[in-house]
Image (cartoon, rainbow, N blue to C red; front, side, top):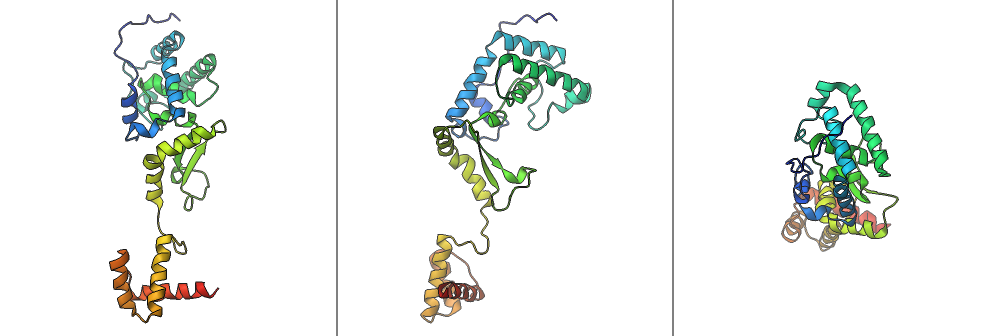
Length: 251
């Protein structure tokens, strides 16, 4: 097959760094992904785009598999654009995937997670942060979206750590991603469960126990809780809290 002549001025280029982070990635700020690990792989990908062998091979494959200039609209979960699959079918996709794996082998990338990235770039002319996720030293995952039989109720959030990740990379990821990537998931699933005592809950229990022992009525304690802790309790709740604390302190 003759190699296509490379045009010196093509408008079809990968999205710049900041635009890549904001489009289709679900990431609201650049700070969230500026870890050492991400910068390493992003810079590596930019170098890859400048390699003549890579550029020419991708252009040959786009022509061979009839990927239109400018590519398809970005997709996240499918293996290929739905429009392309309807036109060419799964058999042709398997041939394309085989060619991508051959390219991957020639580039000696040493991590099979590069394969879907190259494939996505071939189809869409762009990639997003989420495409890099499994290459990184660490990433956060919502277990409730996983098909694995994990204890999703008690531990709905996973911090995935590569066996090659260094202590510095792990700390760097948590420091830069906690407020924007980890804490929002914690808040999403932070539902108070019976029997789980927090410091605030214990303060309320102590308050109820002390005031009941001072002879306060349940209604008065409930009003005081609302005033002091902004916690709305019914008088019947006060009796239950007192009984729990009474039993706990007897042990």
